[in-house]
Amino acid sequence: MVSAARSFKTYLDLVKFEHTVFALPFAYAGMLLASMQERGTGWPSLHTLFWVTVAMAAARTAAMGANRVIDRFIDARNPRTAGREVPSGKVSPAQAWALVLVSLVVLTLAAAQLNPLCLILLPLAMVFLIGYPYTKRFTWLCHVWLGITDGAAAAGGWIAVTGHFSPAAWALWAVVIFWMIGLDVIYATMDYKFDLQNGIKSIPARFGIPRALQIAAVSHALTFALLILVGVLAGCSFWYYLAALAMGGILLYEHRIVNPNDLAKVNVAFFDANMWLALTMLAGVVADVTWRTLVH
Image 1 (cartoon, rainbow, N blue to C red):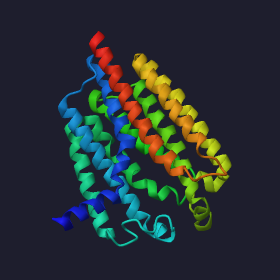
Image 2 (image 1 turned 90 degrees about the horizontal axis):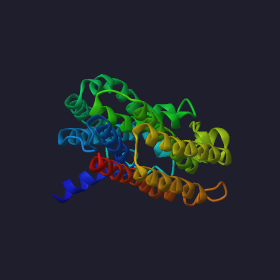
Image 3 (image 1 turned 60 degrees about the vertical axis):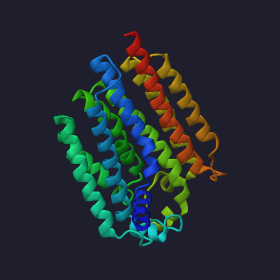
């Protein structure tokens, strides 16, 4: 029993399960806003809620598992990542690939339970999920690929309810794209020297840390502007805009605590601040759709 629990924890660590808090709230937000627009109530069916949750967990597990096994040789050379589960030998490459395969099967099942569009888009989603680790070998635009991939969670939550895209869904996808670009660029500053020495592509490695942090700031400014656009397109109430203002404050705080001369708080900016940002988004949307459902 102890061995099984330890193995389970190892796999949770492998896929950084706690980072699910980044994308899942946006998937739920898309689902709730879509339900409000499509059905006049912010509460989708339990069937949709369940399979969106399963799809999100499976997609993220597949993406992180593939990332870890594909990058194992790079991670082994980097002192910051050498202790990760695959390069350290806690999880074999075969075991990691098996986890990826099982996750993709579960993702396929979940998509089939939702609607035809989810199933049609699945092969493209798999390309983005598995392809991200390779992008850093070829282009400093790897952060954009990651943003598009994670942003699909928000759009996926929307189309899981409606079976089609809408302007608000595209805007919500864009919110996550630019949010993820900014936070991933900040995170990449930790590996600036390693990336330069090993030919790994990233915005910090290409432009330097000061310029990279400026790019991240612009990306997050666009994130805030797009949050407001989502509210307009989805017909949101003041509760949503209150949450959007709080999210803008969190983004501002994130850039206040990280600067080119002091990267000590990158992890705080990356995990803590963005965790609260995602949860604030979900709380704002829950409050918004609840209010609009009651006064509808």
